Each structure stands twice: as structure tokens, then as C-alpha cells.
Amino acid sequence: MGLMDGKRGIVFGVANDKSIAWGVAKQLHAHGAELAFTYLNEALEKRVRPLAESVGANIILPCDVGSDQEICSVFETLREQWGKIDFIVHAVAFANREDLKNPFSQTSREGFGLAMDISAYSLVAMTRYGIPLMTEGGSIVTMSYLGAMMAVPDYNVMGVAKAALESSVRYLAAELGQKNIRVNAVSAGPIKTLAASGVGNFKEKLHIMEERSPMRRTVTQEEVGKASLYLLSDLSSGVTGEIHYVDAGFNISAE
Image (tube, rainbow, N blue to C red):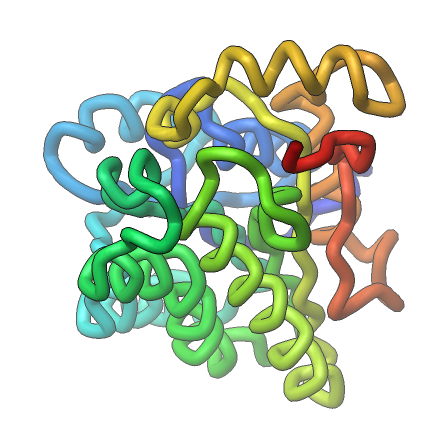
């Protein structure tokens, strides 16, 4: 018996086999979950579709999370094919490269809005369209980072967006608790992903993490997947509105 036997849900944010979202998906699949996936565009579809098919996914849909219409369409397809869902994995974030490289005070208005929209508001939108399908309750998990609670060099506008994401988790959890829908976040240390390549001096950050993190190493994709599995499964049936830290590295300062 797997922890997720009989449960169905959707994973947003897989870009390739190094994605945190893929680490989560592998753990969910290993424990019996039936999965659906989305991809941003045709270029990413070529990477996502083979991965999704390798874990038996039959629902693989295009979705720009900056569009309410596309998010709505995804959940309408899930309603038509499954009727209900048990979980949502939100592992989506984006900021313009120049807004990450420039000093935070130089963040453009447009870039600030884009980072907030894709990285934080998309969770709210997914939740809104997902609620009607969680007829028997469910679990929603998103991905955050240490930059949400302290200033991390070169993280800039993304740190502010992650702070908004974590606050959204708490408000959504407070709203949805009576519906037996739980909302939590996993905040992990840095991992080499496609998204991380946009953060300045990322290799240096990995090295600092290895020196200063409690475990004296960086966290792995598999470990983030396991932490997410816990929050998505019935093992965490009493946990909501929490930020679950996975060797996030509290010994790192902004100095």
C-alpha cells in the first residue's frame, strides 16, 4: 500500500528532470498517485511529455500560469476526465533576469508585477479553480526559499515574491481549513535547477550552503520530494498554513 494510493492530482512546474517539481512527482508516483502535468510552451513540452509518460500520466496540458483562462481550462479538463482531485503541486516561479541582476531598488515596475504574478498570484489562481474539484478535501503544496524571510544576495525581487507566496499560503490555509483543504509550502536550500541558473553567483551560494547549513551539505531533489510527499499525504492531515524547511540554511547571512 502506497501513501498516495487512489489519489489523483496535478503538478505544475516541471521543466526537465532536474526540476524540483519532478522530484516531487517521482515520489508521488512511487507511492501510488495518479498524476497530471502541465507545460509552458512547445519547447518545454518536448522535455515534459516524456517524463510525464514515464510515470503513466495521461493528462499533459499546456498552461501559462499568467493566464486565468489557461488555468481554468486545465482544471476543466481534470473535472471532465477525473471528476475530482486530491492535490495540487505549485512549483512555478519567474522573474526577469535583469531584475535579478540589478540592485533591488532598480527593479522595474513591470518586472516587479511579473515576478509577483507568476511566482505568487498563480498559487491563488490555481487554488481558486482547484477548490471545486477537491470535493473530499485535499492538499496544496508550493515551493519557497530562504529569501522569503531574509535578504539573500542576488535573489532580490524573487525574495519579495516568495514572501508574498508564503503569506498567501497562510491566508489560503485559514480560508480553506473548514473545507478540509490544507495549504503548505516547502522551503528548501538551493538546488541546481533551470530556474536557479537565473540567480547571480549561484555556484557560490551552493558552496556557502555546504559550509554553513546544519547538515553541511546541500539538500537534494529527492529530499524535497519526500518532504512534499509528507505534506501531500494523509500523514500530515493536521498540518496546514506551515512553511516546511528542508535544510534551508539558517546560518547563511546577507553579509
